Length: 218
Length: 218
Image (cartoon, rainbow over all chains, first blue to last red; front, side, top):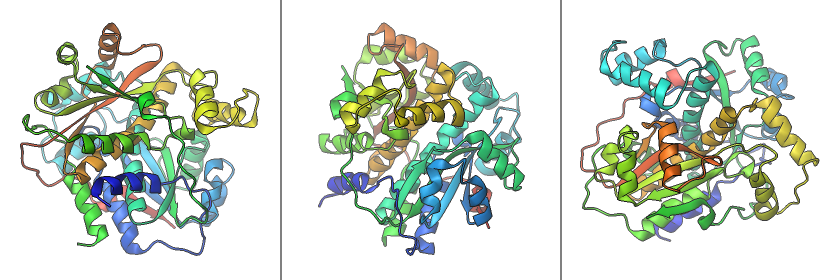
């Protein structure tokens, strides 16, 4: 099999897993690889507006059970259950942007610099991120990049996964805050994802044909 | 090198490329692989709310040049320039959901079915997708999954890429509509991405340390 076939097979291999074998466990080496790929994922302007919570607390899972209806099958059998958080209120006044600029990207942060003006113009004019909800949805979009990368990496290691949007965001955020897991002023639940080993057959993917999703504009 | 090292190296290999070699071209075989992986990407409820436009029209690139400021370096040298569109107004009354249910997923669509009620409850209560903007940002989030998968696939084929949010969405949508490329009632520009072969060195990635982005909740 050549590299191209291998990559297409990998895309088929990744499958939204509903039934996991609760007796199979991901090795530390594989899990560290999945998390390292998540950490190295790109994000808009390199701001990495995310945090990954590996939930190992059964009381917390129980508390979330009804509101995370799309995760219930993962709670029963997935080896790893992850909540991906997105940052709230990440505008130019956010301490996180200053922190990322100065401590990670290594350039001084000045709110009147050309860089800061570019961020402001991008947020206000280009993407029109003018409300808390619009800012959250923007940082949340970024989290779908590591989400995808974690699932692809898992598939390459013969590990199954399931991406999960089936939850009531307001209620999950409240539960996480009540359990002192997040500060709800700073973080919101973006998306969830489980990992483990499937106990089910894979059925062929159903997708629109290429001509429905791809156009060449000549 | 074992598989785990290979996957981490792949994440390092993907690099937001600013300078491409205009003389190098992606083979049809590789490009078809990247697009096939995009097509096979997962999306919320399997609705695939996306379309990929490969822009080969120089007049159109010229028309977008000022408003797609983050794409200017890609216009000069990238072999492939893609606009990823996200569907607008994809609520339960959208013909697309009916189409996906009946023609792709293969089950009858009834707006009073348990499935339809689940979609409505998810959109209205769980994710609170109650405005056109909120619906667009939700379908736009889905497009970041194929975005990530395309870049990873490219990297595995030794092809470089650059994800691009540096554009004025309203203006780009208007230009695409004026050029009869999109119906702006149905589609909006979600994100852009270029591919080619870099003409620059890769510098080591700057990222937050693992302990800043990953927490185990025991």
